[in-house]
Length: 164
Image (cartoon, rainbow, N blue to C red):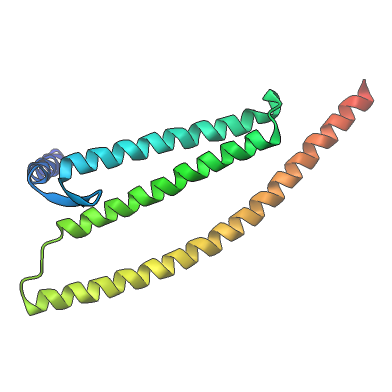
């Protein structure tokens, strides 16, 4: 990227952030400045992500630590709670964009907004369906790969036991 482009991007970011200091969004049932709402939301996202990361590491270590099965389920439940709350925070971020969008002032702009909303709704539905199908396919392939990996490890263990 050329130096001029970097400068223009930097200038654009600076002008956006100065506007952000006066913009308001809906936040926790009220109105808040964009900056505090955004800071709070992003901080919460990072916090939840850290908990998810820790939960996954704890689950991976569960066999070595000889955890009770109920403890593993509890870890999964807490992780699922954090993931759900992250989804809600992403919904909040989507709400902020709607709060910051200018009100249409002409009939043409109102029409543009209506068409845009319909297109976004259709796109969301399409992408969700595609993602669900891909996730289902990926999960089936992953289960098979994990089953094969466990079989390979077990076979290697049998070979080692016979060799000793």
